[in-house]
Image (cartoon, rainbow, N blue to C red; front, side, top):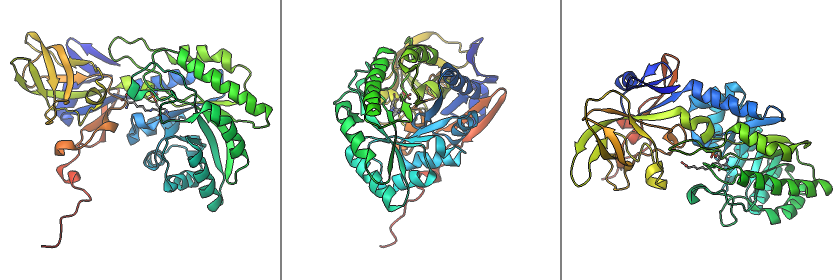
Length: 413
Ligand code: LLP
């Protein structure tokens, strides 16, 4: 769906240079077909189970993308009232929404209760108490799922690993049992599930299988004690290919977990983000200047403000020319215009470049635009969704006025 054609990159049937000309750069471009086929592959992989995909909105929360997924029947994993509002605005079904995150405010809890979400994924005892109090006060019942921290090493980047006991996420699996008993007796709360999420960009299945086994052992102990769970949520985390990784497919995941799940009555939920949208997106950027010297720099019009992953995690993102160029390849450091040395999108990349050359930064559909900022007063880029030979502008490039929206000059001398 995203491929090279005689040196020209095309997204479905749209050549990247045409998109760049029409919408300007930097520009996020997504393939509708790639997103839909990734979602369907996940869904089909788990067809043998009563299941519900709850797409992790944080990976890419653009309304049109949420709308596409909602139309496919997706649910959503949210981590804020803002994400809930986005899901509702895009036509998502609140009855398929799970609410994760360690710091839910009272207002956010009220929002979730009013919308009638599927479950609150509880991350601490204090949060459980707050949810009980808010629900009882507003005369509602909160369906709750305890996010257990199974203490397994997800073997991914430490910044995106979440399932070890030193991480802030979830409830120590050994303490969870007692908390389930407390929850079962609390006003305003209905115990409905269990969940875990051990990390992101996982390239191995063993940690997930371990986490599931540990969680199922707890499900069984609860069952024996008369606490019956309706769902089991295995989180997200399947990796994608950035460089040469070989992440397991959803089918391999289902095959690995299947035997553990056989005969269970709980509905299976999952919260994939990156695996659904990551490889469906790219960031188009143009070379502004070539700056030869001790190192050869290619200064491009995209920056860490548009794509933070390389600066924040030292993440490697593929960078390629998106149009034919008549130049010699050299090793370039691809850098943005922001006044920070960390504003490097790729180091020592072999590229044939001229000033003005169009480049594509690959696998930027997840944790790309969502992590963009306006640092250095840079308007955030536009986003386009390609559908065959049609390109829909799903987010306009930010205007300069938008940079100071909501700000006030002093009206006193
Ligand atoms: N569920 C929960 C509770 C999560 O915390 C996350 C991601 C997901 C699901 C989705 O994980 P995924 O399937 O996308 O791996 N900004 C980082 C990634 C942070 C992930 C945070 N949690 C990056 O750019 O690599």
